[in-house]
Length: 179
Image (tube, rainbow, N blue to C red):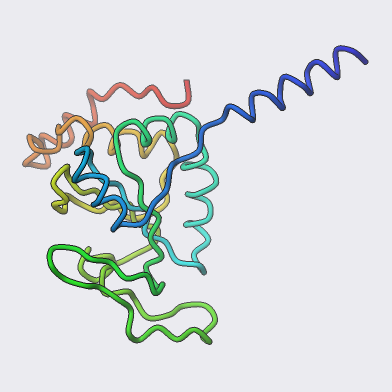
């Protein structure tokens, strides 16, 4: 019985120390970036999207993913069909066609259109100056997302200008998430 209580206490204590991603709005990320430059990662989701919920739970809920994102990025949670006002590059993006009474799919937010989103979930990267880098569309496991997180964080993407270079990068990449 004492062993069981000890194990339960250990599990409880380890869950307390688990770090979650420090999500913010895009405007908050830009403001933070002005004070302390870091890249931005945007989790663009919709409320009806099943893979979006899985990405949130399985991938963004992973300790190694959360630690890496918190250390290297400002993390933004963005509802691509929501009503949040986004101020980016002297433009104000809204969702004027949003219908609050509609169930399921809604109109796409203007900022989602500006980021050229064609599917959900989409993970979008911006550099330290707020410049758009690229989206990664679809559900990714922690291991599948690791290559993108590290490639962008380390600026390796700047040298990957051909399909051959991208393939060589993938072939030589050393995965550590999940170990």
